[in-house]
Length: 327
Image 1: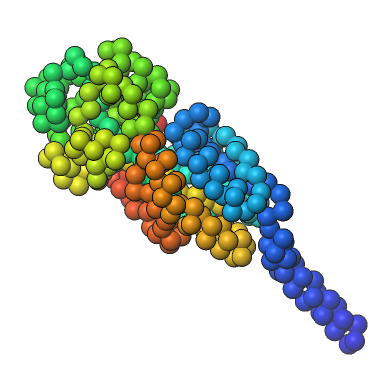
Image 2: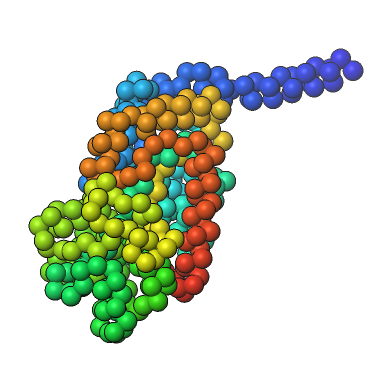
């Protein structure tokens, strides 16, 4: 009997120790660099956004931030990497609408965008701008709509690829405006913008930051922004909703996440630090220069709600437009 009792006590003790171990590790966190995963290549607007937030995080944690790039599959490779990482606080990711709300509606993924992540902080929103080549005889959205209705087979529009927010913004525009335009997918926003400037494609739904120099130089004309509110970078350009498409809203929403199962003390520390970082007015100014808006902290619950709302919204657009990865 005593022997059996000893076994039970030993088993219970080992179980308690195993449960306590993650929290013991959490007390020492962070004791080494933290990896920040980005689902895109270096040098783009997402990279710049991540580095601005990363600088603040380095200062608050007292540890270096190591940037790791996992481009591909609409940024879902980066999200998958974060979801499968050890939930120890040393791997976090900057995610956006693509891998969290669009790709789950287009393909079977190895992660659940809600269940497999610990939400840390909302960062910002990046709207798009409807660009046309100067040769296109449309000076505003009404004129573009009239042009597309008069010549439904003449005009096409470029995007950064099938399933990108640029692609879906175009399809949402077609649905709401009741027009037709062929989608021309490119391998990235850079090549698409280059062809727009060269006159190879007449229309593009482009990320605001990279488009600003082209608009300023007159190489492209801005007809409207796709976000619910006007862009601080293009205050004189009205939204599509203002121009007769009520409810139109298409943008990338950036959030920071960690793997599910992150110990509560580490999650609380990261959430608290990031809330303060994102609320910094100087960070807001720097992010706005990149074409970002709606900058500011949200609760982890709000981050999850944003993902759920966008999952439903973009799933509806994808189904109505009949979009597949072969579109």
